Length: 337
Image (cartoon, rainbow, N blue to C red):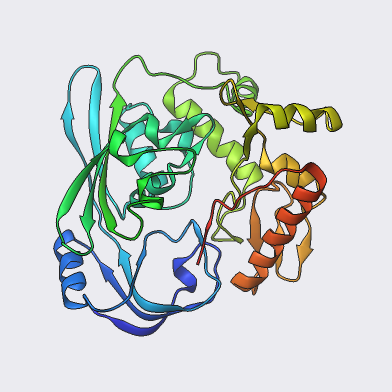
């Protein structure tokens, strides 16, 4: 374990933004993590996972602790279910493929989401009709001050749409070290109702899809819409899909009858942020080295040398324009640092 001063974070954030950490250390076990926290208790700290859900707009004047804990295993199983555990530093997509390879169902719709396992409960990540909360069993997290490991159940995590206790009352208090998922071994709940999954399966002439069929279809769909961060800096979906009161939707829908929507409850409706941004004229636009992807308006991109501030300015312009056109506010899903 070596602490490095003035460390470049360019390769530790999927936007590929050049920013410096005052100090940087990578930890590979809970014991190392405890040691670093203990020996640097008075220092300001910044916890870094896969760097896939953040926009760096400045240098980090703190000790950046890169959580690189590895390992995955089955901790309990019966004929119907399995409890599969992954350490926080495991790549999310690789973990999903590992579960599918053993015919464990539940994570297949979240294939190819960038990032590491440890950050998935913080955002309650989701895609194509599923969210982490659907299969989450518990996670273990280290209290930064007391250095005690606490187990958080699904109920204790207080999951919401891209929300959890770790973004609210427990923010900056814990570091997630591992996550356990309850996955099916038989009678898998195949979900093809969202987005383009059914159309992609039809194209492949698949009538009774398996878990790997679902995963492959979603990978194809995502690759057709979303740029690979290794080739074009991005953080996936930059904005949340806004959830608005049904009464507001009905009023706005009269002015924009082509607006798509998804019913959330008797009183709330979700509107696709990508549609709003595209209709506002931003899809495919470029502002210097910052821009909006040509295939998916939800994705902001770094064409090479954009700063975090450049991308933030574009996002604010989008928010302002969408509000003016549709009277709907869209929030960033990405953490602005």
